[in-house]
Length: 225
Image (cartoon, rainbow, N blue to C red; front, side, top):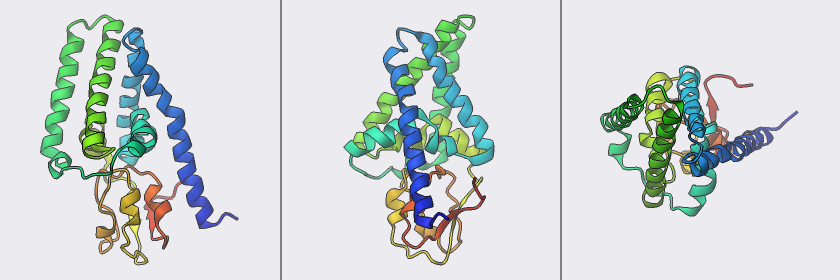
């Protein structure tokens, strides 16, 4: 029978191995998409996957299946300082502004030549290249996952299913803060001890906080296989 420590290790190891496996999708798309525009449809696929999964597990795709999220976690984070994501970037009015601006621009660009799939692919690639460049800039100046606080897909997942599968915090919590250090989004997990539930809709549903907890005080509200 597996111990709790073994289960934690396996969960984190599985996520990290999955991220290493998915990250090349983004790297190949970014490096070759300008020449082979149809590769841009991998971006559309990631967007669609995130929206569909949001109905079941909120931002689960952001934390576990997003190739760009994997890039930020596995390659960028070790090279950057873990600063603070400004409060205004977490606020919904600002995020909705980013969402409407980028989605509007993408729609306008596609509408210029809607019958050409190569054109569609180039638009998706351009959006990915520009926003990744912004994300890298934010990572080195603010926080590794700062872009994820304002990513249009992340905002949509937040709105659709941010209340799904919430993290539960038991009375065993020592408020040591290790979970918050491990959290890719630096969410204030321990502050929710009194209510017993992390209500922040931007939780990425990853196992990092659970694995870091020395008192086994964290678990998901829904049992996972």
